[in-house]
Length: 300
Length: 300
Image (cartoon, rainbow over all chains, first blue to last red; front, side, top):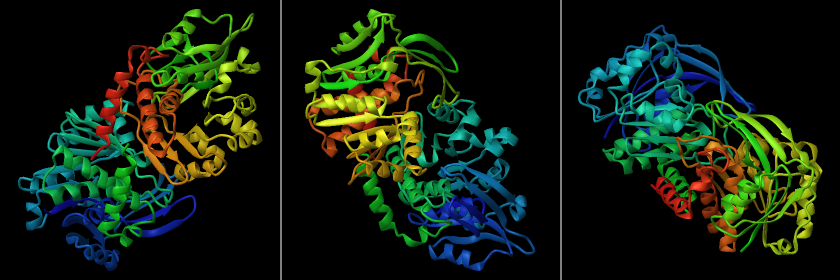
């Protein structure tokens, strides 16, 4: 079942304690769609400038991702982000953000995009996220991501959005900020009571927590000693999760937990190199093999 | 099979963001032995002053803990620790430490203690830990804890100890300090190569990681919204783990993982109140029930 993602498409410059890369392929919608493509057809909606290298689009298309919704603004520049990771590789400083064409991103969905029944609203302004939602006819599952900026400056809009979506994915510090609660178990359920049927709190190297009315659980990250670049881990996680749900065409509690596990596995590959470099070298079979190891790890 | 623990016995004063307690029962050997007592006979070796309330000893004996090795120094004062937890409840500041009689703790084991085949050297100076080890005849399993202080000021002694023990339990920041590596997967294996057959890295609210030559895994903490006082969580974890191993009389990879899970469950109860208050209200059946929930949580 096709899965639609709307979000940022970017050129990232990333510095880690031991290495760096400049102007590499990045952005929430890119990481998400690449991860999801291992499971389900994906349609990507985003915007770039004419500095966007055509080979990046080719890379996405090679994985079957529909890029008909990737709009190129003539004379515009692509969104650029640069950041520097701390020694622990779990925290980072944003050095520069140039929104460029993303600042005025006003997504108008192509006709066939509007019929997507599975929708992921990647991190962006709640106003834009709701504009997208308004264009999609009767989606079966809508999941959104958000960030500290929107919690602070578009709180009311965000609260409106939360009442219109099925699931929210956010990280631990954002969940604490949104609920003013330092206990993640309480925070998760507080967010859920703001609207969504389920909430996923991402904890970086410590895994992810899931909250629904009848379920509370946590799954650890897959332990890898090869953490090269954590950029995009959260979006890869969401991509793996939603891709698996879209492929199954349903989101029962059982399928949701399997989807969480697949998200964790995809993210564990993503962090093993810069940009999409590690992901380009893997197939679905690699995900399945690591998932089997992960399942064994959690069995006692 | 009896399990021997040698470590601190203390009176703690604990402040959390919402509450506080003064001079309550604490200390690594106390938390450890109480947790272990749900699984196996326990012999406790420690030292207190004559300010030690007799009812504390009674509380331990009520759980069948052998306190013959709890030495009372006439005219001495019991080890006192006071600390204050931050809002996140996962980090704390130590406000005061008065070692008192613990400063000159020179454990001389009673005869039947020397025959214990399962031994836990709770956090203490590596010199004292080795003195204990010298007195035990042919133990089958020796596990030690350590802390940043000893890594810094008794590094050589600690390295000697590591070659004489089967397992080391330490927390994430200590593992990073000991190995100068910020990646916990690499750090765990580096510690293992310093001597012990297995290493357990405790991550507080994020669970624990296990490392042996052929295995690397992580188990999350049991998610509880009721974190009242995390003091003693690490020692309760170790107590549950070692108690389970002693009860089974072996430490195969399968049993070790079950033991880790039980340690996590015991710790999840321990943090639900100050001192041993929550633990006093539970039976082995409560641990088994929560373990079943935990196992279900990790099954997909």
